[in-house]
Image (cartoon, rainbow, N blue to C red; front, side):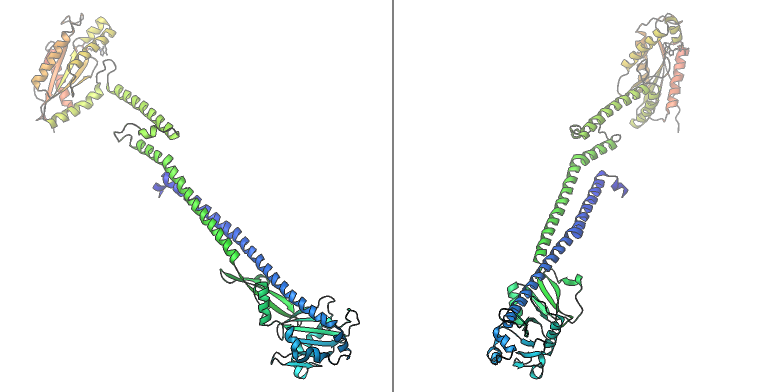
Length: 529
Ligand SMILES: Nc1nc2c(ncn2[C@@H]2O[C@H](COP(=O)(O)OP(=O)(O)OP(=O)(O)O)[C@@H](O)[C@H]2O)c(=O)[nH]1
């Protein structure tokens, strides 16, 4: 896990995924907490408006009934009938209940000024028969609740304007009352005329037709509908709105219930979801595009850069990939600067290596490089089954040379001798090293004792033939060298130290022999384990 997090690519992926999830959560929160409640509140308003519309339609029905009731109340014939002056009134106007069918009435109640029954006429709901009686008794006993309810209302005081209300029992109906007056509306009132219209199926379907609402009216037996439960969402397609209306007898209620389509809410919700899905889709696309751009513009080049930097010591690859250096952006600048620093570092390193392995005066290999190479030379000679020779060269009486010509001249002399040796031994695998002040050692791979002695003598004579004057020498007037030669044969295991010691011994012998000569080691180097 920590390895994955160490990669910029995965960290970006993780960070952008977190951002995406947060954005989605924010969208979900906004939709859930802000937009959806607003849509539901809008739907509540729509339901309340529809309920109001239904109530208005019922109000109109009450108005119509009241107007009919009032017309009859100020009719001359009714006025006369209440004074017992119109004996034909009942027979000609109410006979056989024709008027009840025409005006869609259940009952008409005539009360005198003291609210005592004068005439009660209507259609008995139990059998559909027309009944007319002076009091709610006998065949008119079914009218007792209506008469009692009317009398209570008159007793409580009838509103001076429109007096019409709903009746919850014994059946659902509209009820109105009007004083019985002169035809010009003047008093005194001779009594009261009340009309009751049943809210039957035909009446309800007419109301449905007029309003376009799927409504129903019931007299509830349960408790009143709590305010919060006045709108109930049945499923995703329909909801039910309920409102309760005061009715008679006192304390009764009629429940108006409307089933409403949730089309508006559904289409708003569809639009919201459509916008939400598009937003989510766009967010995902944006995140993917950002990731691709990041990958192409930054992460992939950085990965190449990091791979190059990581392999720089192990791979033969020396240069920054050209694609990185050719870029014109910050990564390109960084790559070019890195390459520049790398080259600078390499130059400094190679200078240091050069300095640490070579003698500054003569430019020849120094003791350190010689020690490295002699081991390799011995190893290679053994594996190639060849000889390897060591030539140890010492300038004769160099102290005297310095003393005579001075130290700077001695330095110049050393340079000339070194150059001569370099020219003689410049083949691959050969190494000329300055291993002491005026002492040099040469590694000669692939030469037998005889060949190496011959090569040593050639060098010695070449140095003598330089004809460098050596006035301080007690032996010769020109500069000469003594050379000790030692070889290791492929059959023997010989260490570098042994070979060097043997060459040193041979050099000593050359010095003892009078200098300006070459001596091969007296015997073969002893084999070691
Ligand atoms: N000019 C100069 N002289 C050096 C340098 N290194 C060593 N020498 C001198 O080389 C001389 C070596 O002297 P010795 O070891 O006594 O040997 P020699 O005089 O050559 O006598 P033999 O070797 O016995 O022939 C010393 O005087 C050193 O000061 C150098 O870098 N430059």
